[in-house]
Length: 158
Image (cartoon, rainbow, N blue to C red; front, side):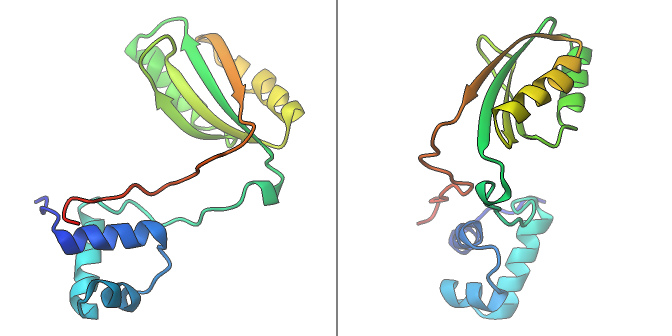
């Protein structure tokens, strides 16, 4: 059964999106509930799929991943089998952070992180070009990230 979110659930989700390392006690204090019911709400939000997982956001620049590339891909053919094969193949590449199926002139948008332009060239030549159904690739190099958010504001009850 999917539970309808209320004001406290929404506040919990907003808090966790900003800092998932907070203890249940800290969250309980922020929403004005005791620890036990707060824990039960978080447990239910996980069980119902509102909370998928907890992650740490790592600074890619500190790890030498200086180049962020947005790559659009157009396939030669768009049958269910070829789409599925492409998706299964491209998700295996460690350089690919996101794969989005898009509408319009292209079929996919890939978010790729590599060390530098030479590293990207090697990635394209050794990995992407090995996929048989690609018609065209178009790469855009990100010069500056102006806004980088993973959280979206839930304001259903605020």
